[in-house]
Amino acid sequence: MIRAAVLLLLLQTPKPAVPFTSPLTAADLANKQAVVATSAGTFVIDLRPDLAPNHVGHFIKVAQAGGYDGTIFHRVVRLGIIQGGDPLSKNPAQAKLYGTGGLGVLKAEFSGEKNTRGAVSAVLQPGKPDSAGTQFFVSVTDQPALDGKYTIFGRVSEGLDVVTRISEAAADERGAPLERVEITSVTIRATPPPEPEPFATESSADLAKHRAVLETSVGAITVEFFPDKAPEHVRNFLRLAALGVYDGTAFHRVVRGFVVQTGALTSRGPLTDKQQKAVRNLQPEFNDTKHVKGVLSMARGDDPASAMTSFFIVTGDAPSLDGKYTVFGRVVDGLPVVEAIEQAAVNGEAPVDRIELKTVVVR
Image 1 (tube, rainbow, N blue to C red):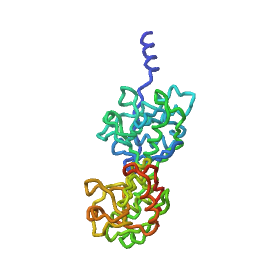
Image 2 (image 1 turned 90 degrees about the vertical axis):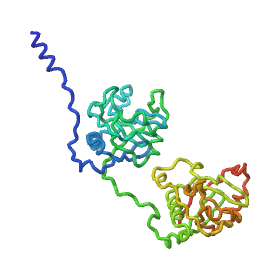
Image 3 (image 1 turned 120 degrees about the vertical axis):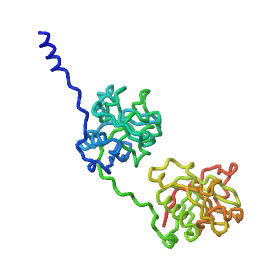
Image 4 (image 1 turned 180 degrees about the horizontal axis):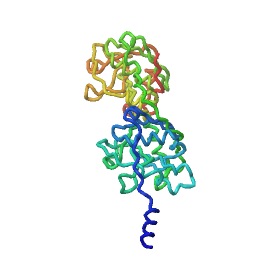
């Protein structure tokens, strides 16, 4: 009788779940992205089967079956992480259980990959390294304390501004957003070829044909360029302008009889991922063009190779700048606007009232 009872108990005891193993081949998994559309915007994950093939295979399987559609980001840490993917979060009535669903499916695939900004990792049950499943979290900023403790299976390549915005959602003391931030769909696609940067292949002769109109809160300023003197500075300016990097920056420095300066990223809101990737240090292209009134030149720090986005328009002869800063263009229309900016009331060198570079239109 006892043996029969023991046998019955054994039969009723559920067997441990067999960890998921992806049936997809390495070729099937390679070069895939997940486009995550949410109620707060869209971001793109580069999936990394080289780090965690079973995690990537499982994510693809769930996404293609619509398993993420209607789930939410149920936990946020401001500028820390965002967590989602729990199938229970489709149902608002199960809010108390959010964070417990969809786990216990995958064995750990730890790697040396770091939990830096944009890393996408699998959520685990506490103390159980082989308990991952549908839930995932995205590191909004570097999280070195998590390195080696969670399986990283992807990295956000576009839309980190969206991820950041989700992390800033108003939340309760447990990190649960007060309003639902929903994943509307997750689409798996082949990784598209890199998008060419604007003006990357144009010759100096082609670059010289362009003009840029600086639309400011005071009026419009039109500039021409000197690619024969500073081709990479011209290319850089046109690229940043085309991507909207200069939009919403301020004229942060005004020195009468010397310069008016703008383009500093600290004077505008956050850049998108695409914009941020276009910002880089420039090697100097010092040349024999003199710093006279109306000349366009690139600002920099002490390092000659530290120029990035900030530039200035000279408002009076400035021979002290010659050969030390890269001249790359000059004003051809709108000099009275430059003069009006120069006359602004200042506190030190900073305008008392904000003078904005609203946008730069390339023609």
